[in-house]
Image (cartoon, rainbow, N blue to C red; front, side, top):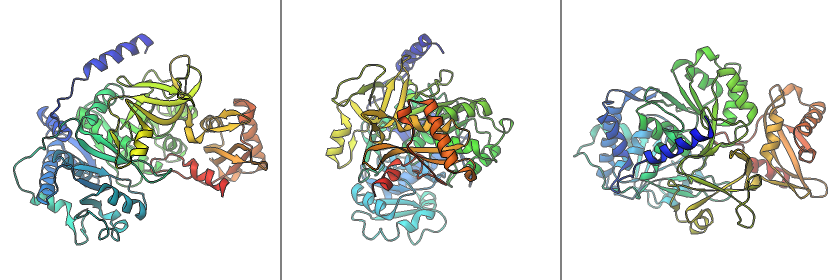
Length: 532
């Protein structure tokens, strides 16, 4: 795709996004849209319990919303969701939204302390929890200050309400809350790595806008697609991948309730004709290295996408060579709901995160608040229509992140000569070595080009004089190769790829690296080891 064609597409996409009516309810709109187009009998989700049609989902959503209202849960009150990826997840989420109730999906891998904080902070009146995760909440229920109802998804409701029973026994007239496009629809709690988790508040209109601006025109989803997302539905990334975008075009999504591994995803790709795969860089790297990864002839992939952290060029090239499909890398945040900076299929520039999605504007800001010129590194700020309206009950953090129309991403980038943006890492991950900035991601990307390296994480580490230098933690494809000789070889390898001062002064071989539930490397945990 030429630059002129890309600009023409930008204009066409922006014009195609019509004004969302002021009176608007996302759940009612997305369900009605599919039923009006004759998709009542078409599969919307496939999970371990079977195949579910758009008509069945619409009925479940309506009934669940009626059940919540019958329990006395009113508009704008909050419902905390800690649920596995099954048909019950979109049932509960959309059921809340249709009834005007605020859904709060949370990470299923957190601690009891995290959940206790979120229940109290959100003032949730209802908890919906999968049977598998109930033990983490059992001791919290009586102490939660505003919690009145517990609904369990699964066979054993633990003496609480059973989600399936509520749906089956629901009664009442069809109801859609008279919400507006700017009404609170749901919250997503951000990572608590720098303090307590923050509840990013999103509105009904933003869900539609992410599909109109990115999911359909840029990601290119179609009605005949079968979709799978490695990122779970409770993440902003997974919510778009596996709910908003597929339903916007009438596609079918496969849900895997268990933790995705290279082997489980390989089995899924062999079982289902998945055409669109959403992943994260760490997963793609592990998938390529798995002895059980399918051959090209065994899969139906036509489009693969990535986000969560910058995609190393080496992983992208290896995947394209093996499966003949580009991985389109992008950047999005919980605060912006989904991807706003991306490579486009057919216009991918490896080693970059691409260009702004039409409808969004990017600027890079220096340490003193000035806009930096092309070719210089700055913190990425984004302006667009899907920004969260605030962090709930956290004015200080809201003022720091949401700067008028602009939102701070916390990511460091450089805009190259072609207008593509190159990731330098998180602002708090950047190193200053001998007065010069070093991007951990750049060093990691160089290490990943070595044939023995599977994963790498680079952090700042104090030397004997308490001066910060790069240290690399490396996972090898063959652990038995670890040793001083390979460590020296990796250092020389980095020197051959980058300016010599950027090479890691120490290399430590590890069996694995600490990661979030989406596969992002948690460098702050590695840094903490050096400060202990």
